[in-house]
Length: 136
Image 1: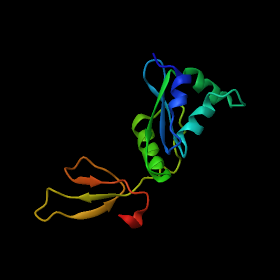
Image 2: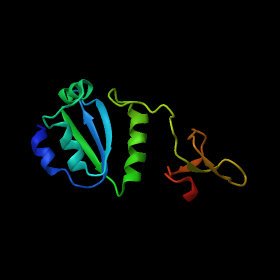
Image 3: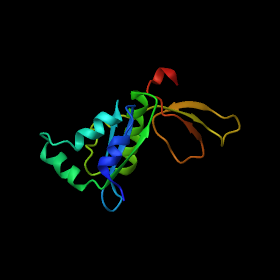
């Protein structure tokens, strides 16, 4: 059985992404943190939270986390997990910012190399995402 208090003690003070689940295993929230230990613990403290956050915390059955190397990686991973899972407590970004990928076409006589912000199911190889388009 998942003991939230015990798991909070195990959280590293490193950057990463945390994923909150309800009792059925559904992802209800994805967030990023510079320090997973500090950020995730905030949800379970008895301080002034909005009604929305209080409701979300009441539904959390367990959480998991992914440690990354830096804040930029956490941001990209968070964005991708939110787009993939559409958790009900995450606010969807209005600008729907996408990150660039390098696309290599494989179905042409001479493969092409392109920078794109959309991944298509077209048989090409995609590499990325990249937080800084100048580093593609």
